[in-house]
Image 1 (cartoon, chains in turn green, blue, red, purple):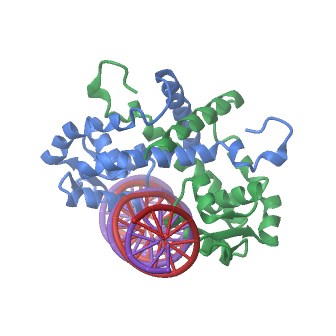
Image 2 (spheres, chains in turn cyan, green, brown, orange):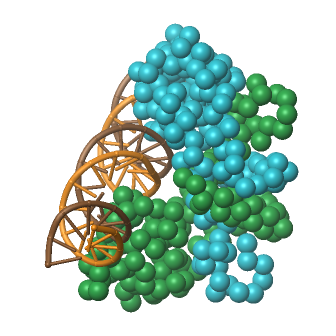
Length: 150
Length: 150
DNA sequence: ATAAAATAAATTGTACACAATTAAATATAA
DNA sequence: TTATATTTAATTGTGTACAATTTATTTTAT
């Protein structure tokens, strides 16, 4: 981030990449909160549902890899979604270690209601369409990099 | 994010802006965790310290505005930093409502140790310098937009 | 001057997030 | 085959994060 000189400046908030990343993520998720509450989901639950809507049934493990969450976070989230009636959690007979997550009819139906959710950002983020595409691309590229180590 | 057609695609993870934002923020903060642990800070505590290093003493309120955190989050974080001996928390005599946060000698000294922290990202994020600058700029612009409403 | 409004922190309750550990099941190797 | 290693979830403990409420203090309007 700091090209050559000014090593003394690295600890200024304005020079950090991580801070706007952290703050922006929080603020954007905050915008989603209200519309999501109307359909009975938290943001984390919404991401889980999006994966299931797109890819269908899936083990807890695969689900966690897709959305960068481990069982410590995912297990309680999935139990809540089960209690809400949106997903089922069943041990595979072929391998009792894996918990298979599947959508209920209610969970599939929720997708229709969720289609308006992304519009919550309209007008809240003052970026042009091209800027959003660029931002999304850079974030995905950065995200890829973090997969390897760690 | 979705320009014209394909409204049915908005709920795919790959088409979302918010998801890579959320995931990337988490992954990057995770990279900071170990080096920060060595100097006795969490990421949130690190942000607080950066603000104090840069701007000096500050009320809890102003601090919270700078880093987008309210008292519900900030009060316990500041109490931990106080317990660690890095900051002081004192009610202003002029206005007993405001808690003034100031650095202790130990807190000021910590800045030297922290100077190597940003290097933790080196090699972990596969973006060029120019891409990082672009990303930082777009994130800050997006962040600005969220200030207004909400 | 004093009641009402506003402000700043603290508190309460819910929901992640993650490192580290544990437990159960399956795969592998000697 | 049977002891060992690996894999998948669940559990435990700590630390945010935030909405909503409460408390104490200060302003403001009457």
